[in-house]
Amino acid sequence: MKTKKASPTEPVTVFFYHDPYPNFNKNSHDIVITPKLSNRKDTKFGMGCAIYFRTYDGAYESFNGHCAIQGNNNLNEFFNSVLQSHEPIDARSLKVPFRTLLSDSKSYNLLHNIFGAKRARELLTAAQDIAVATGFHVSWRGFTSSSEFSLGFIRSSEAYFAFRRAKRIIQGLSIKVADARQTFSAALIGKGPNVTFNFLFDKSNFFRGRISVIIGQNGSGKTASLAKLARGLADTKNKSVEITNRPDLNQVLAFIHTSSRRQFTPASEAGMGRARIFTFNPATPKKYDSVPMTQLLVDVARSLGPMYKSLDIFREVLAAEFPNLQLYIPIDHPNNNEPNSNKRGGHANFEDWMRGGEFSQLKQIAQIDHSRPIKFVDERGSERPLSLGQQSFINFCLIALANAGPSSAFIIDEPENFLHPNLISRFMRTLNKILEATQSIAIIATHSPFVVREVQSAQVHVMWESEGLIKVSHPRLQTLGANVASISNEVFGDDLPMHLYEELVVHAKNQSSTFTEALQKYSGELSTEALMLLHKKMDSENA
Figure 1 (tube, helix red, strand yellow):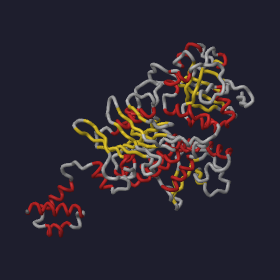
Figure 2 (cartoon, one colour; figure 1 turned 45 degrees about the vertical axis):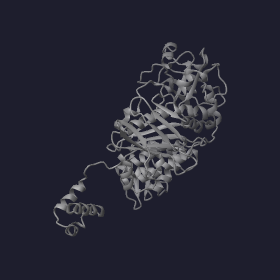
Figure 3 (tube, rainbow, N blue to C red; figure 1 turned 90 degrees about the horizontal axis):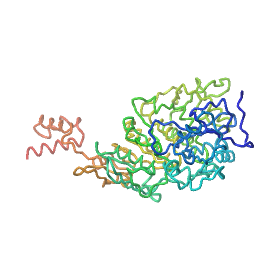
Figure 4 (cartoon, helix red, strand yellow; figure 1 turned 120 degrees about the vertical axis):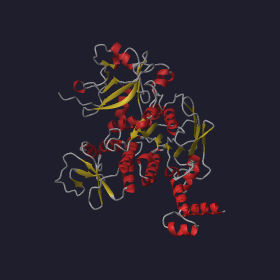
């Protein structure tokens, strides 16, 4: 039996389901709310849920959210006690009030794109959405000052941002006025590094930019500090970081290495706010959090509307960073009878993809074949396999654009580990383009002077040890645009007692009786600096 299509003129039906994976073929409810399963022990609040909205064609779109029912801190426990028969229950039959909130601003944006402003507002009102609803079935006096709201609903920066801006998003209005770039300090306390970072993002000084860097020698605590910052910025109640002048953040996106995941994932209750974590590993280029590039492209394409046009940004990145390559997308059942020189072997040219009206765009998204990879073709028409670093670079761009929203914070751990040095500048330019488009900021832990060179010294935080304590300072050298060798010497230091080249210079000295003789032998073998060192050593020996 075909599911009945929703009509905007009919009353909106909301049902609670005990089963986290409801069988939608057996119902035609406009909204279905189910508890969200969690493997974590939740000792206080368990309000995570999935909210399904039925579209006009009978399909369902799923969103993460929060659901509170008065007198019940745990949604699963409530369902176990009330929905004992596991049969769905009509929300209108509840004797107590309930409230919901979608987890992030992007969800409200997507809801607007799918349903339009009027229908989206009707659905959210029926779902008793605390950010959008204009009327409630049953009043809940003092809900916004309750612990359910402050600790269960808006503990995360994402939910708080969505709560304050959902009405504008649903109306299709821009929220670019939100900007994460502001001066703030973060004092790390508790287990791990106990230091204070002063982030000097300044809207009036474009040289300060949107990127800050943390550097230091191995063992100084860069990654541990980055993990604390990610948790503290994502979770407004986190006790391991004291943030002064907290930035107006939408969400925190952490790009880390697989081995660091445990540090960035707090072992705490499910109600805690946390960063969205993405791992990259150069050894497994085909698995970037198990999401194929084609799916990421779809996610980027759907990120349209009142936030920003991420697909256009990706087009700009490809044109700027890969000017001699064309991207081709695998599609199902291409119409090869159609005269189009930009189709080849079941792939469509990216420049033609997502062109046309709304119906055409939806059709093109549906035609993508996710079982096959995208292709890159050079100016001679030959397929060009991407290097490991290029794949990682493009994956980062797609994941960043698919997940970022206005006023985000990017936390990135040692990007140079998966990039060729020549790609680091591309990475930094692309990151800055995304940050500017989304009014976001980034904090990067790095060992690379190529990364440091792109940032003003006021935004470079050097971690170093003194008498058993870790301290933070700024380099004396102005790092923005500085020589890489100078940055390495000033910022990273050079504490090795003897380098290999010095041993070779000593060997050259021992094989020559005079510097003139050594110069004749080795002038073509040594750099000017090494020859000067050789001259100095021979002079000191003859003195």
